[in-house]
Image (cartoon, rainbow, N blue to C red; front, side, top):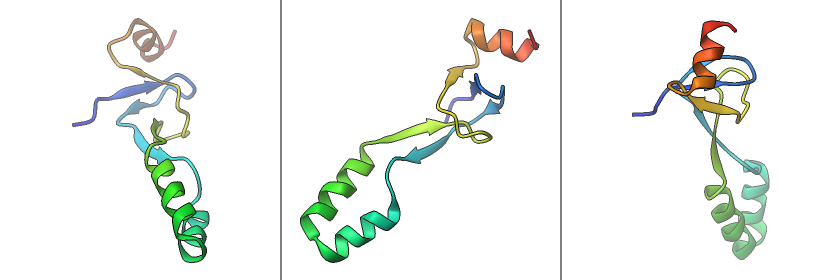
Amino acid sequence: MAKKLVCTKCGALGKPRWKTKGSVAIEIVLWICFIIPGLIYSLWRQTTKYQVCPKCESDDLIPVDSPAAKKILAGA
């Protein structure tokens, strides 16, 4: 179960989404044209996943129980 996080950019509260760096289109072209670079690119993409805010897609997320999150949620 994903822990709820607070976005420091927009103040949204909720479960983060996972985002992967890179491009699916480039990955497909590399697999079709060049198998080894396609494999390397796919492996790189799988290791660069990170959590983002579901609202603004910022990666500046903090736990709900942190003092900064409590301050954001209180509206200060």
